[in-house]
Length: 262
Ligand SMILES: [Zn+2]
Image 1 (cartoon, helix red, strand yellow):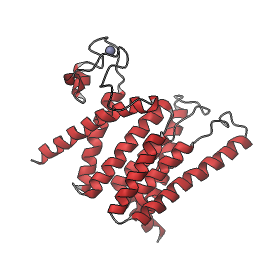
Image 2 (cartoon, rainbow, N blue to C red):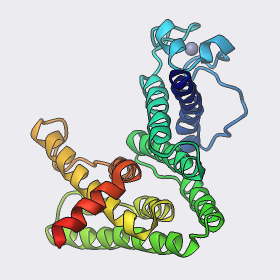
Image 3 (cartoon, rainbow, N blue to C red):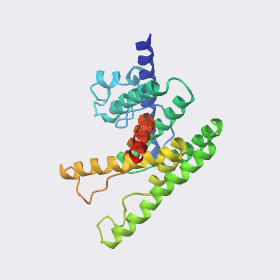
Image 4 (tube, protein in one colour):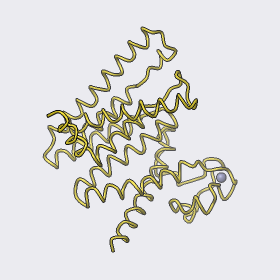
């Protein structure tokens, strides 16, 4: 029975992941989400229902469109698989309560933001603003509104400060990226969303983790020659990674840190 529940949750996760793939493709292009129906981005042929099964279709079609044989981005199967795993992880952590559904929404938003930021360097207002509002409504329902508002201010405030300070430093040292800057207002809004869902205490944990992940992965990318020091590396995915770890293990990490202090 348990195995069946796990399987069911994984399948629901991958099906929603399949919908998030549509969001990731269409939102940055300003297209509607429901119409027109799914079609191949290369030849515009409508996708048949059996070609729309998460994960399996991609494997059966060997990552190619059945009509034009054009290559379909590996991101499709990746997002479907990741969402299946994430939903399963959330279920194992929270069971089926209100926390599960709140964080399920939050993590789904993070998946969409991560991939639009990686592919287009964009964190869209069309995603962050509605997420903030839904998050605040969820706080209201859980009678935790003050914590959500404080979290929003703390999260967005910290990243806003970093944006301003890094812009000043980049100008001072006349760095080649001084006009693009390291982080943008999209990151500020994302940090606001994180604060609403995590609350002020745990948004601090997630900020710390995000910076840690950002420096480690950034260093690996630069040392391995995959990126140059002057290349733009989007920060949204690190914020998402920090949030995910905080959702799953934040209480443990905070408890461990506080014990170090006393
Ligand atoms: Zn095609």
